[in-house]
Amino acid sequence: MVEKVAVLGAGLMGAGIAQVTAQARYLVILRDLQMSLVKDGLQTIENNLDKTDPENKDKIMNRIYGTTDLSELQQADLVIEAVVENMAVKKQIFAELDNICPAHTVLATNTSFLSISEIAASTRRQEKILGMHFLNPVVNRPLVELVRGLETSDDTVAIATNFLAAIGKEYVVLKRESPGFIVNRILIPYINEAIFIYGDGIATRDEIDLAMKMGAGMKEGPLELADSIGLDTIYSALEIFFNEFRDSKYRAHTLFSTMVRAGYYGKKSGRGFYEY
Image (cartoon, rainbow, N blue to C red; front, side, top):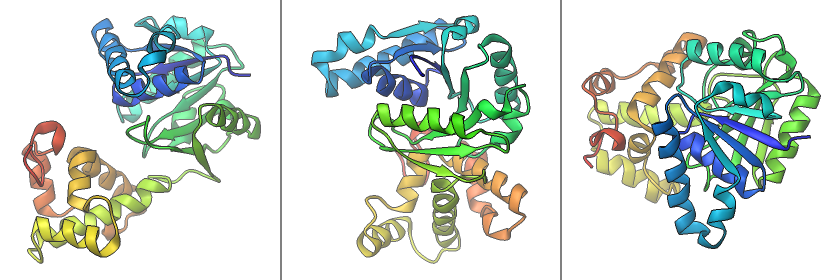
């Protein structure tokens, strides 16, 4: 039974996960490397609650405890890791968690693309490791992708699905892991094809986005979406897909590679396919 949840990483994803968990009356430990980062995450949650649930803000915030001490996670029944998308970093964290957390603790990773089985292999509890991929923004996106590693047990999946139901999330359970899971496995090639149309000079940026919004009923065009996600994130995903599948449909256009090298990351850098 899950009573206390720990979230590793107080960025946008970690803060969002902590918020929806605390709103469901769970006690939450929010941990990051520096207290300034923890405070930024807590402030993000407060700002969100000011807009969405000001009456209950104090009660919700009182359920969240910020820390930089990894050893405090030994109190958690479920740990959700939401740090940088770097395999070496995640494996180191999971190895540390394996030594710190009790045997019953389930360890979940919020990775979007990386191998659950490889992360799990850094522990002695591979049956208790799984992917729990929340979508951004966590507060507004109802779906979570649950991803089995090679040895993830049915009991672990059941604990995860019960938790997600308790915090009001819909979920899909992948039978086995695959880079990008469901959403990004479909979404990234869609965006990449739009980038090729743009890069090859077939249509302008605005025409591509308008075509998909007006012709396919999309809320935003693929190049607008790319800027929102982050061009560096998309580029990294394409590299992972290409290395895993060895399929040319995942190669990046040279213009796109150049943009990323130049620091055009989209909204977060002020410039991508659009300027902000």
